[in-house]
Length: 120
Image: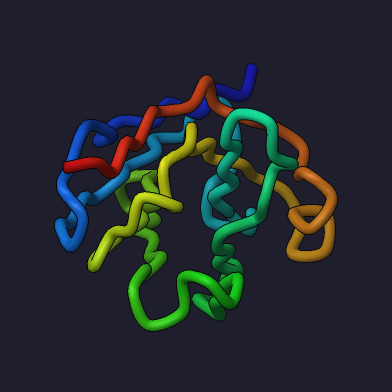
């Protein structure tokens, strides 16, 4: 049974930083692409970043230069380092797994999500 458990969300002021973590179990982590989606109230879900099994990365335009996705296969963990946070980054962030292409349509498995709120 695949489980993805996110952590690291919280309340941060504009310009601040957070690092999200997602620990995976029940799957062969190293052969899966991993991604982070976010969903804000009243908005469609958005693929924020994804990382392939060999470390290739891809970001949505609005976070390029501010967010960094990385993975540690020894710890079955994917990270999302978020810097220079803006109020429009406020959302529930979900970890997802799957193939590189399937992540664009939601992936195969989702975590329960972690809330990120950017506000002064």
